[in-house]
Amino acid sequence: EGTEIYSNEKVGPESISAMKIHTVRNRRTPSAARDSHGRDILPTVRNRDQQYAQPFDRTFRQGLAEPHFVELDLGPLESPKAITLLLTGWIFPTDCNLNVQLDQHPTLSTPEPPSIWVADGKGDWVEAIPFMGFPSGKTKTIAIDLSDRFPSNDYRLQIRTSMALRWDEIFFTADDEPCEVRVTPARLLSAELRYRGFCAPSTPIPGGPETFDYDRVTTVPIWPPMRGNFTRYGDVLPLLNELDDQMVIFGAGDDLALAFDALPAPPAGWKRDYLIHNDGWEKDCLLNTVLGQTVEPLPFRDMPSYPNGGEPHASSPEYQDYLRKYQTRTQAAAEFWRQIQVSPDRDKR
Image 1 (cartoon, rainbow, N blue to C red):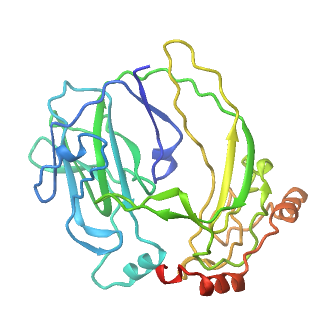
Image 2: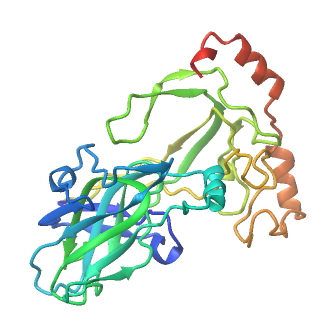
Image 3: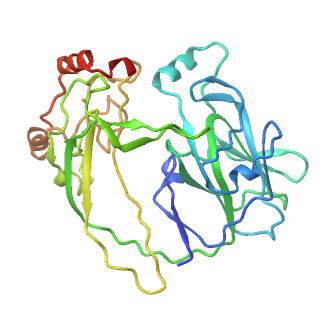
């Protein structure tokens, strides 16, 4: 009790995003925070209240902003051995089509991933972390280990990037003793794949991401279907119990209902929080995505590259049985276009 936990989820290589639980008992607020235009953003990032600091004024394309930074002053610290920075925010990303366009643009560059620079104590800034990672989509908290990154007792840092990142809350810990955690897996009891439709978008908070209302749904198709085979509807529990490359393949409008075994109450003096661990893959249906118009080829964990990574497991009896039993559903393009033409909502899409 009295401890917050955060996962290590972020976009980045395993060296910075491997599974880990960060504990926080004594959170600290920076003594100052400003953006590259000199604006004081500390009141905006002091609390998680869906008030987002946008440290850039200009965007060139969706997801590509002017080069900018957030500068933080952690204040006077007594040479801490461990510093962890925790940032809650979201990213409006580019997509595959825009990345190809930017790669061919004569003056614009692709978005620069966020890096961390620290004051060197001599009046200059030096790069401390070339790539710190960033939130994977909508609002999430990421943790950055800053231990041994400051060359002097000047605890100022800058987060530099040209990605469209917006921040809701920023805090840090210094020599916060790690708290004992007990990880108890909850057994997955049932998993049912079904068609549900599309949730209605909610009016976004200024500077915040678009969200969706799960209770307001339309069953009218919105996206043209991809070619290929999807997982048939019904019980898919056997596909979700192991990391075996036998995946549940979603189509547009699909819904997966999960039920987990209830866990006993925690002992006195403890409290429980929950993390959902997913291992999967996503493919955009874009013209510049490699084989973006088809479901196949299906990826597998040991694939060195997509799609030319070979399929050493595809000929195994177990995998062939998986394909025959589960990967049997297709989405009808003709039915999609028919429903779009007769839908009273078609002018809204």
